[in-house]
Image (cartoon, rainbow, N blue to C red):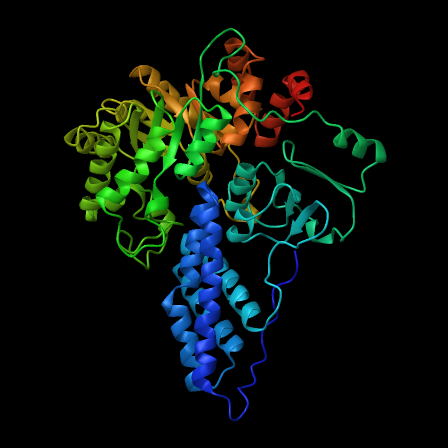
Length: 537
């Protein structure tokens, strides 16, 4: 990745400079950056579209442009220096808030660099445009950069920062690009050096032997479509579903052969707005998603605002620790109308569709919260109401939460973050942020046991479901469905079809018996060795 633009000179504008014109140049540059990001968001789907829309909204944030204009007019700063200093002020305010808000400071700096490059007529920071495919090495990737990667050009990603469940890794998986994050010595890799990157094992090999390069070049082509419903070798059904974030993602998932949708993220209709979408706007969007899966399951998650997705109409600024604050279902405590409107829209869209619509709430921690959500859904005529299990308390007492809730879906990204007290975006904690942690696997087992006690299905819709080696472990722990980025479905389906349910249970016991996540992962991969080798995984 090229370096970001250097800090512009602090020298004031030259005497005689038209300061009004200079201030207008700031507005125009910010608008061009905003429009470019917005166009990219329209062409993207799912997580990529969401993240690009948020970054575009940051470029349009009047607080940044207004502060930069003030510095031009009052301090005689050059436009580039004014944007630089204004962005640093905003970033510092976010860092002071801590938690997920602090993580957004990196996005502000990304927008700053783009606007400064626009003002100075420099090449925009981001992914290089080379004439041949390449492995991209970076300190870290801004979400907006990752969302726009072209899998035809970028063969793999290696970063020094980030975590395995951070935005970079999630988006890379959705694009089908092998990605290894938090790699020690990544920045020592030189331009033109040959490296082998294995996203399945997390290995990055510098200066590989020619025969290793030859093997990689002739590796078996990856499967691109799920040809059969999810089944183990002895016929045990495991629904293989897709995670989607917008109507385009739903159509793409159907094209790949997904059996249904296990996580429909509804945030795409709310991000970048100062007020929630109307009921009719939501009905139109949801109906498109339901239409892609007639007669099949579509699990729709209600608004998951808060933490790294603050929305001004439901979340408050200044929370000392947003990840542990008012997020997910908790936002409805103070803003019940937003949830009621969303449930009304889901009910209307479902009534005109043949899809089997299930509804679930994020960030549920207690039986009282689960019961209250079921009551709200019932009032809107939505009979199949369930919960996300992202909080360890919910996993520990899942039988209580599933007394009335009809199903549960494990969000393993947040469940891991909360169980291990490890921010998923921090590279220094990457070794903790993995669902292979034996403690996390124990929580999955407990959540599934609660489902069995109440005869309720328990699925997984976190990134763990997309790991072909971990998928049979999850099934062995009692998981009934796996939902993932659509690109991962064929590989996961192939691995499940090669093992029996008893073998899945043996793999789960093997993983739980290990002391560390690396030991668990290595033991399972060794046991699956022939299967993974045959499938090129």
